[in-house]
Length: 220
Image 1 (cartoon, rainbow, N blue to C red):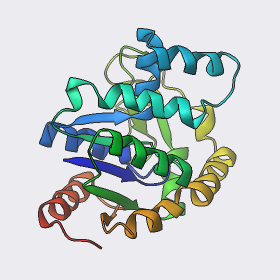
Image 2: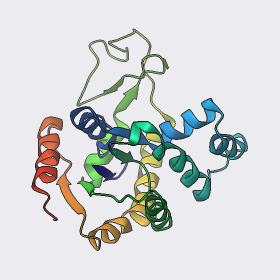
Image 3: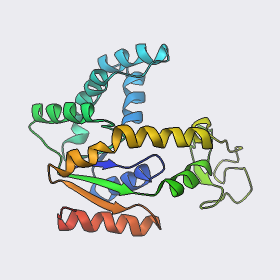
Image 4: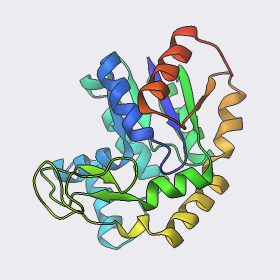
């Protein structure tokens, strides 16, 4: 099965993708992880991406598509995959369609996690992360508090507040999402592969709803 997750920053895509990946034994393809791995491994697309990153520039769409081409041809994706964080706009979605056509494949389902902006802002601004790269644990000042305030439960490192999780930048990130990524909802709805899932509430309930939509094969 080949699945794509849509949802604004803070909607919980990463969490649900990881759970679904483990449940269905599908490769979880996060655009950030693919980018970092390709650069680390020195692949052709990774080296091209690194040139832009070293200059502080966004990696262009054609390089991102090359990164995904490398990954989707990997044996780990033979049984299917879950896309997380890509595509982010209509042009990328159309390029992805062309790439999947090359691979004689297609998306089976697109899951849109619906969440209000107010809740998203609360989720993101309260997020605290462990800067220890060997740990990377995530906590929240309201929803998932560490046992000791400001300290990682797992490794004892002082937690940090990411700069792009500050309130003023969160509003900006949400505005960009609504402008560029929200139109993909209509794009995939027209293909009759989109399902909407309520992204508010307990993680396990959201996950159960996701599994139900996949099992039903219904279009919402």
